[in-house]
Length: 514
Image 1 (cartoon, rainbow, N blue to C red):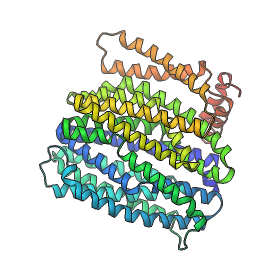
Image 2 (cartoon, one colour; image 1 turned 60 degrees about the vertical axis):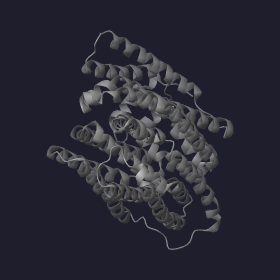
Image 3 (cartoon, rainbow, N blue to C red; image 1 turned 135 degrees about the vertical axis):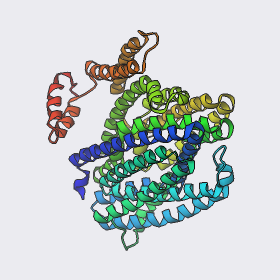
Image 4 (cartoon, rainbow, N blue to C red; image 1 turned 60 degrees about the horizontal axis):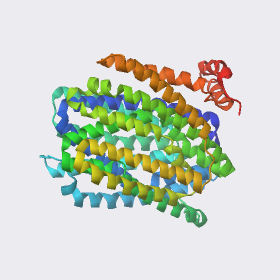
């Protein structure tokens, strides 16, 4: 089992997850486009609101169970305690069942308040779709979290890829038939139900099962506080991650504003996942395994490298997203959805500059500092709610955008302070400064190419985005962003893909020696 957490296995898992995310994102993007064009801005806004609400319910149903399961199952396997990992699987799953029942009941009570703006269908149908889709998706996410704890990342990769293609085909057929909103809601429900069925079959093939014995009390003394503080932070996160903005837009600005905001958020999240999902997926299991095997020093080294790579990817996202936002919205969704372009530009800017927050969160969780994560989440919901309540009633969609940017920046700074001041983890400031200088240089070159034309076409803007990527990569070499350890990792990857080994050799003159 330990081989699942070796360097080569982690690289393989990262590539697997990245590849599956590309498939899922591409399929999801096209499906979203088909649904938007088939329904129009108002009904698409109601459909997007359903997807958002379901996501919030999934977070609440799973609260801290998925994070704690990955952390402690992986750590138990790092100690060679396979029976302990199985016992934890059983302990966590029992609590998930009760959580789904409680959250589901609370949702049914609040349905009249939570329905989409302008909903004219049967309220029972809306409640049924939202509840069943959320419960089954929560079950699925718990299952793949246990699989990740075992180092089996293929469970998520294969199920996400296959079912995203099924959803794409279904969306295409329904759009051709001119089916109303209720038909697309049914498709969402069926695909959601298929997720846990597929995951359960794969877990059985991988022989990942619950244990029959009880967990050791000494272990539960560590698990319970970790789960409690993770639960607190997750509950708070569920109401701070664009939740207040989306709810207020639905109530005050209407379904169309929800659709524009959701399109921008979805494209931003998709860009983040395309660039960083491999690293994000393997980071926590890798840290937990390192913590169980070697302690805090090994975890700190992994965290430092993760911050570097996240910052590099975030700056790449910022430039490409900014230059591509307008043509992407126009080509994919049509001129009716033009207001989503500005929202997308602002979201990719703030998300790109704060992408390394993922490394901070994983570090706080692995080192048993869930109280800090909970404090961060409480701070997030306070800032998010205050900004949204102030700006959305005054400025509508633009208010929601700037409220989101303000809260994202504030939470990032809070998390940074926790890691640097409280945990005293050394962070790669020099590397981050070099990457930022490279990105600013590339942005200056690209902006010059953009403003050279009075009315740039969609093709022109896309080519400027490509120019930014090339200029950014070149500037990382000029500013000596990479070191010999990065090249060594690239060389190891070259054992499977020879082109990477040749690339590592070519980059030797441009690497720093540290």
